[in-house]
Length: 528
View 1 (cartoon, rainbow, N blue to C red):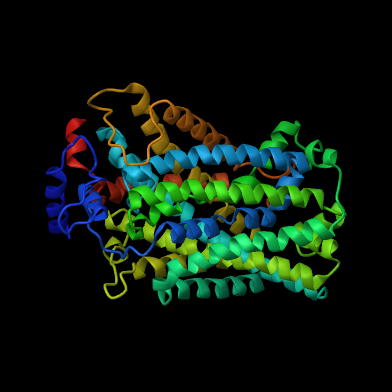
View 2 (view 1 turned 90 degrees about the horizontal axis):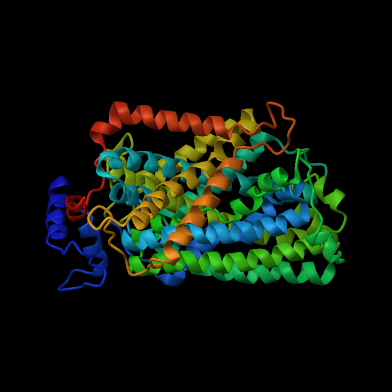
């Protein structure tokens, strides 16, 4: 493996150091292969995704309007209707700036490692290995936690539908865990036995995502009584008892933040996408714009059609939107059908998250960043799949689900750490590329741009905006929903996140510092 990487390093060194060879395609070597060779990697996975299929992949994984419904309660308790509207706009703009910053770097370095690869190239040589390693661990933790959270959300939605149609049913935590395992089994089956059809499946899911939008919007708007504009745009709620409405507003942003989480998934699928340096950034931006528009339309529709909000907030299902659907249609069957659309997309999101999490784990193992790298970095040649990484990702979720049997609060704290992990992994490369942009040292800060670039004026503005948004989001992701907390209602994600950081640092000092083969590009390093 190392000999092969050495050969690829020769190819990279033979390339002009002025630019990454994005536009060059000579002989039998494809542009994607040459880009990978430039960074010392070789093609091991099959490139099955095009623009439409990866756009469907990211759209379903984000599941913006579907996810917004699922976590609607948090934003309504802290912010109310007006807080949800303005918070959504704030998060949409902030996410767009953050994703644009990531998209630009994905065009420069279209590798499955994503953030940790970018950091290894952009950071000063003296700190690059450590920062790259930490970024890799944060990204892995974020995606593994995200996989568990979405699978658990699917399980609780299924339980909610049972409660809706059978009011005498009493949900138990162990039952949710068993449903979680059923969801995980389906997701694992699709990611292994049906993996070669995954691009076609994602194209189909994109159609369901868009048609389902109308399947929910039309009956909701047509059948439900409508509220006043002042009730939607001028009514704030401080249900957490915070000292100011401003604090309550920022805590309630979690609803909109969750709805846009995971756009970097396309980056981690880069080595399975044709023409990745161009397709990946455009897919990321397109999905944010499309999902952002669909999500905002359904948010406004939902807020105008709340009905009896007290009944919705105290619904035994635990999901206010299900009761809103029931009131609008006056039918349990119709509400079930509308909710099933959301469940289907959530299933698709879980499939995409496992694919993303496993590719990231595989890429990090390829660079010897995790224990068991010799196995986790293997690719099953007949299928061209990282089967060990897929299986380990499933096992991690399986073990996390056991925590829910003992304590739902503990489980929620663990899986909620994905917000902080994601945004920290975003901030590190954005800070590094912004530093290079602003300092403009002709030697140390020479940037090898890809075909998707924001330019010298727009770039810094977008980077700074995305950085500010990420900092705000990360900070308030640690806050509990209410000012008065108990061990059950406390948001323990700050403790879990700190423990994860500490573990990563200790693990680096003991093992990673010696074993981690951080990505290096010789021409770039020579210039530094």
